[in-house]
Image (cartoon, rainbow, N blue to C red; front, top):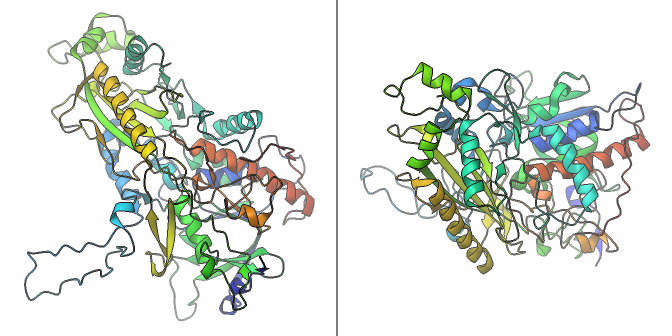
Length: 601
């Protein structure tokens, strides 16, 4: 098959007079994966070479900086730790629905003289191309500095060997995981002093002796001397880079598209729009071009392939041909394919009376005694301090129980507690199940409809396999069994499956694979980028996010830490290449040369 050069996506003359900003690396997206790329390129874990300046890095983010420290977790505000259920509103306000099918049911109470929408009309950001039965209804995206890390649960488990890809060998995975855990601040001792943490662990270890109940790995640390937690986010990963003159963060700067040089097969410019800049008669231009040696797109599993599509990448053969029948080198059939998303079930329980009695009788530490001295039984029947930290426990993924569990209390857009129930007796159970990697499961992008930012409207086509359905049923049965040992169901929060997409753990839409002995054209049919997350056929374009995590195995665990591993690997490669070519400042920094030669996934 003949492949033409990128003539369809060469530099657009209308952008020729835009102001040009130059840098070594442009990172699009400010979530923890984009932050990992920035940190590892500028301040690698192995230590930067003394006396050598770092490359110049620019990071752009469509959303605004919403916290004093850029990208900080919003739950670090004390008010939300005192009133966890109020954090639900923060989560809901940070998520924007990806694909909302068109509503055709009429409003029967609308006055007869009023105008009413027509059938299949697109309005209020709805998507008339979305099949309601194949949608990920609850999927959403975050547009703000820090991305979803400003409101996530901070669960950072390593993937079980049955979940993770074989793209790297075990030693490489271990090295990458250790560095990712160091960057995000993963710990398992955050809640060691929590009374309910110890109680829930004690119950589960007694009732499920073969399940290895343990503390959920959390990207967090306890605030010294107080019952507060500092939750990790992009700001944790970036650290002191936020004060580094070689690092620039531009919020409310939206990357509209990438432009390519049709001779070198490289990204030549990124077109960036300053969303908040006024357009006056004296200065009506709100765009600029950024010229970077390397471009890294870290927009997440939906917005990353969306930008690639807007920039000229195509997944359908008929859309990728020129007038002579040649395929564009930006033709990648796997773009948007192999989409996976976790099934999810949930319930809340009120602890059994006998477990509460355990707290009353046995010695659970000086905190309980101090609480009783302050409040007698008439004032507070429970011997649990009011500010006792909520539990975060897991029954790990195994071959026999292939799902991820979070047995805890946290704020979500569901699962609030009625005011008449003592919150100290509530435990949430959230189970996350695998979905098989299937070529048919995908996200596509409209040629006609656009989102609020003028980008192609995403549309989901997702269905669970028979195996997925059976496994999710087993997962529900296991959750009911565990819940039954802990307590009785909170009315209104009985066991239930949650809407597709609510896990917000979509993976695989720009999957990475090791090339091996196959050609790049062959690799484009099964993946989008290589093991260093470099896009096939484009020399200076790398990707980051859950979207690069490949099959054939699917994951049930929170995939953020694994996505950071891919970013570390990609950053090592970029740092190596910058060392060979020299950075923008004219200084050389070879970094670590990776000699991994494992078989492809």
